[in-house]
Each structure stands twice: as structure tokens, then as C-alpha cells.
Length: 183
Picture 1 (cartoon, rainbow, N blue to C red):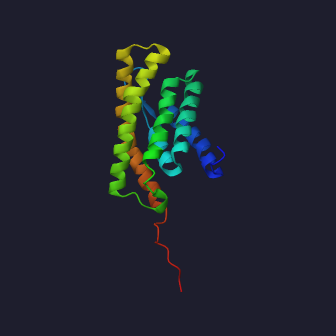
Picture 2: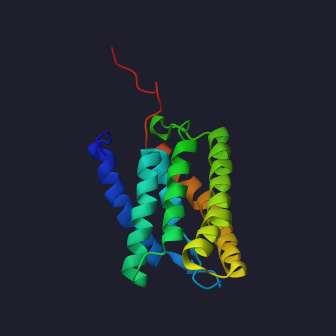
Picture 3: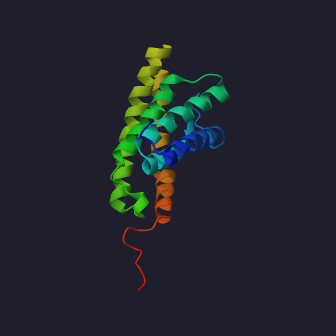
């Protein structure tokens, strides 16, 4: 934490709080038990792209952990860890995207979406189910169905809502070299 700026630390706190709120009030039941379509991952992706992998990882970890503790009584650690993994890896793989410079080009949008899809497929389709089995002795069939639904829905929500959030954010930034000094 010593190397994090005050701005990033504040972003982690606010980001985790927004993750909790979105997870509670902006999620849609999927029809699969204990598995929702979550808009919070679109916001997590925005924060990971803007503030980097450490912020993304901590927002996912803290936000999901708090959401579970507040609304379900205890964190479901396998999924909490995957939320941290998703935020961290989206932040790492999006380092070449310079939204602070006012650009989110078609190439960057494609790179972002391929990256987030791969990260989420691994996280929700493999890591979360395996941890569910190892930590909680959950039935294999159940956890892989839940992981697949979570992964697919998160890929879509981040692909659509996350892309629009990042695009909108990039439009609020000044393009590099766009400001000139008047004579």
C-alpha cells in the first residue's frame, strides 16, 4: 500500500462501496440458484482500467467480500477471490489502454473485451468451481453450471456496459496534444 497514491486508495474505498451497492441493487437473478447477472463487474472493469491492477484486485476482493458479509451473513470466499482475480487481471491486461489520454479506440475496445472475456472465462468457468469443490465440498455439476452462467453473464455485462462506461469516461478526458497555447 506504500506505493499507492492517495487518489488510488480513495478510489479503492469508493469502488468497493459502489461494487457493494451495485451487487445489491443492480443485479438480476439468473434463474440458477445463488447466481445473478451482475452489473458490478462492468464498474469493476472501469475502475481496473482507470486505476490499475492493484486497485482492480482490491475493489473486487473487498467489494465482493463486504457484499456477501452484509447481505448473506458471510463471504463466499471462492467467488470473492475470483472477483479479486478478475479485477487484478483486467487491470494488468488493460495497461496499454490509455483512457486518461482521452482515447478508447476500436483496437483498444477489442483488446479490452478479448482480455476480459478470457480472464472471466478462466475465473468463473474454472477457478471458482474448483475452489467451491475444494473449500466447500460443493457438487461438481452445480458449481460448473453456476460458474458458466456467472462467466457468460459477466462477459456480456462487461462487454456491453463496461465498454460504454470506459468509452464515456475516455470522452471526459482531454486527448493528448489536443490543447494548444494561445499566442
